Length: 237
Image (tube, rainbow, N blue to C red; front, side):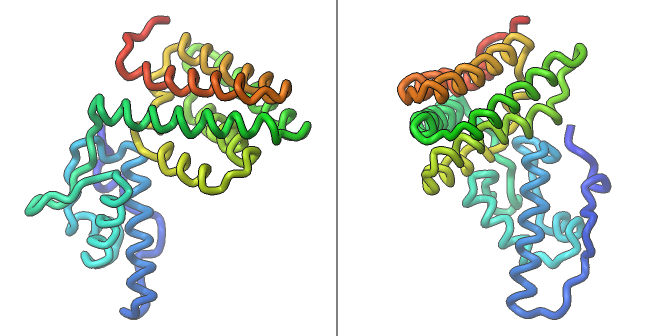
């Protein structure tokens, strides 16, 4: 369920000094961040309509910067602009799933292969520590706290990007993984899915330790494809 409008009220100061282009840009940036965070946090579910006037009231800015923010979010692929209706949060089709996770598999497997030839001992130590931390969260009680495991998982994959050292490749991956569809993948995982994911992480570290790029790349590809499967394969514990 989406949060109520009142629960979405931003915590920042809504006042803006003057009407200069710098102030307008700051207002648009602020509206962009607020709306984007709301979409990524599922406050507005797929298919939800976002209206300029309501968003202007929530963010405390005029409709002009809100309109600019919506245009940017449309360009990001997070929503579509609908004439006379405002903006609508994008829903995801099977084709979207295949395209997004196919792109992830291609890009992230390349990162893993590069990282295998460039990882230093301290990188391997940090990756191993992240595996330890994620496994501790998974094994801590009956219900998995995804708010704890998600940032650890993000750091694991982000560190691989850093190790690979390919800036443009990293930018492309980050753009893909910030899509709401990808960000919500973990919430669909069963215990069995999580155990498999943790094993993949461990094996990727082993491949990096062995400096075997093909091994690292193949495990990462399987890891991403397994994430794709949770959207269509029935859950089993």
